[in-house]
Length: 111
Image (cartoon, rainbow, N blue to C red):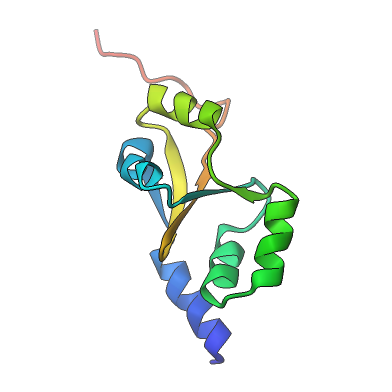
């Protein structure tokens, strides 16, 4: 296994889901980066971990990788159970919003 494949395998094991309230401290430390939908969280993690500056700069210029906006932070603070895919690539925490399928029935309290 090459070095890059090893990094990818290690990061794949660390990829997980997190709720906003778990991610808030990272946002407050200004180390949270939002990965656009359609872009692989794992690919971004590998690029950052392997110092692929050109690729990372390209994503930043295309606004595919950015710090959360004030609007995003406000929305997420209003829904602290909002779920994300998350990956820690020190010093950053990469996140991608998980969408709730529209056909998922809402859970109601029991009678």
